[in-house]
Length: 84
Image (cartoon, rainbow, N blue to C red; front, top):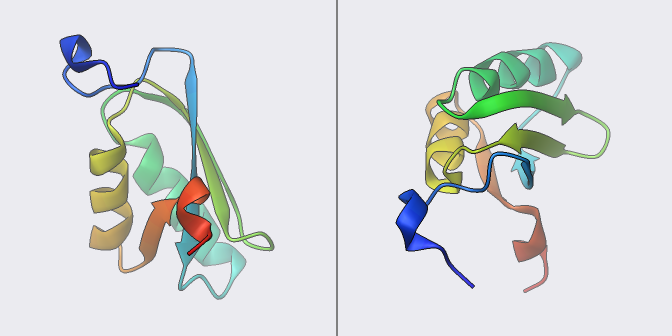
C-alpha cells in the first residue's frame, strides 16, 4: 500500500534495505554510508560490503536513495527486488 500524503516518503521510523552492486572494498562501503547519510530524511545508514546490502533508517524517499547510490557510481535496487 502506498501513502501519497507524505510525498512518497517512508514513515519516520521506516527502514529501507537496498541491494548494492559494484562495491569492491571497505572504502566503497564507507563512501556509500556517507552518501546515503546525506540524503534528506535519513536518520542513519549502514552499508555492509560482505552482504552487498544497505540499511537506511528515516523518512527518505527510495527514489532519492537509489539516485544517490547511482550518482556515487554504484548500482542499487530495493532488496526485495532480488528475485526475478
